[in-house]
Image (tube, rainbow, N blue to C red; front, top):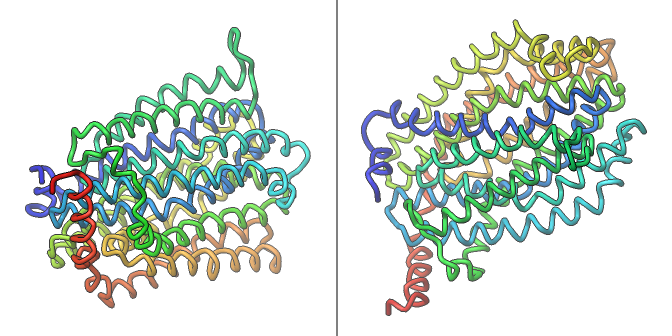
Length: 472
């Protein structure tokens, strides 16, 4: 194990946490600018164009989420095996997870491409939005393999504690995407402008570039990982284990994405203005939550490596500190978002006053509960670190399908609140779910689970790797 990874298992927790969290947050901010860049340029085409991207994103997010759970499982296994100083298993887990996620992305992309028109019709998308939404969605489906590929690369690098390289890759591709967007949206020289669809084409190109760079790094062996083509030979025993570990995480991610899609269905019943307000407001909220997600990922990696090393006490300290830092950081950001909401919305839809006003109302409803969301994210990071994916799955299902969606429906359709009833559902659900999460964490069940304790499985896989490499 290199010195960087060793430092994550000892010394100051806050220094280790920030050493991981800051690059992860910066990388996630840059990653989010793919979506924000699209929103910035597409916003110049008007509210209907913004709505076409808004209705497409939840479906793309849903399909990505189906595979994201397996990436989470791979990252968790890698972090624990790094902590246990088992390099052969680190390489094995990385290669097999890449293989599994790659096949899944091709399958989901194909299905999504074929069903895109049907999905949009089921959503009741307005005629002035349908054509642009279909073009944007279908190009996004074609790019799923690259989205999955780079996301898996980031997960692997986080698992081994190397978080700066993904940040630099994303920085380069985001700049490239910002330059390509106006060229493909509005046209330039010999390049035809494709409108909303052009934003998806530009993102497709840059994400493909990022995925190929990530794969080259993993095959290059510069960091605490060195994949070889032989590592990608299917290991069905491992794939089965990874599937059962990743399935709850996949359900968790999918539950959130399905909840977002269902919310879009509900909001669509209030018209194009409501969809546009939700879409632009969600961009702001998702950008803010990047800080919480970054801290959650850092907590997950740091706690995972310490759990793998058998240092449960330090892992518990990481959880507490992560929750405190997340609460105060996101609370401050929430106050800023509440005060300046109209200005943030206007950045994406300049001059469209109805969308600015409606979007600002939505953001302000949610902003003052950002700190509670931060605590919930940090503690679920510890559940993932221990491999307790069932807990995170149940919490996601409760959050989206027991709290948020029923509240949004009841308050918007069966009270005089109307569209504001949907906005009220967000802060109420945020507060309740953090209370449930804190109670579950306090039970301490996560301390009893350690994936690397299955040494029989690990030794068997390592022996197979040694034999295949011709060492024996």
